[in-house]
Amino acid sequence: MPDWGARLRSKVTSFLARPAGPAGAGRPGRRGKPDTYQALRSMVLSLDLATLQMPDGTPWGGAAVALMEIGLHKGTASIVAVADGTVSMYVSTGGGVIGAGGHAAVRAVAERFRTVAAESRDQLKRTDDFPPPAAGEVRFGVRTMEGDYSGAAPEAALRAGRHQLAALYRAGQDLLTEIRLSAPD
Image 1 (cartoon, rainbow, N blue to C red):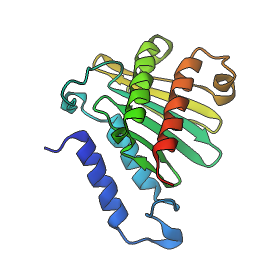
Image 2: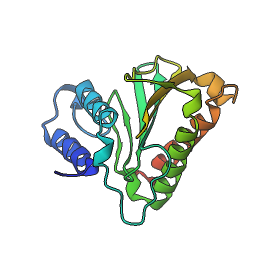
Image 3: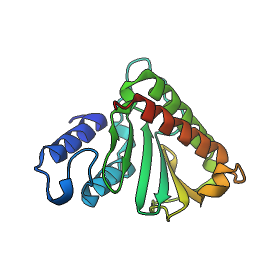
């Protein structure tokens, strides 16, 4: 069975190979289909953690999966880091970056994000459900071998450092910056 990263790449490749529909649906940088975003989100949130294949010599540290979702006026931006080195950013209205973990700088910041996420579990609630954030809200999802955790806060409070999850937000923003820097223009 292909590893998690190969399954993700396959799903994205098959989506991008479809002909564009109205308004360029299904093409990078253009408005995409919401079902693709939901499928990618569902894949990461339902990932069987026991199937993760760690690269040789890579320590297992932090959370198996760390997710930061930012509720925008029209949609959601999701940043995800997986212990196997998979790092992605995708937007519910279409577009994103898949495979950013191929860059050493991104992997290093993703490892820090997953570590801070694991350290933040006491400030999150155990969950079986990961609802999307409302506009102006940031929602975090943390998956570990011990269980899944979730929490949310107003983005303004996180940005100002006035919330207990501000350190996790900063680590997620650092990852978002590295993803953007690694993406081709």
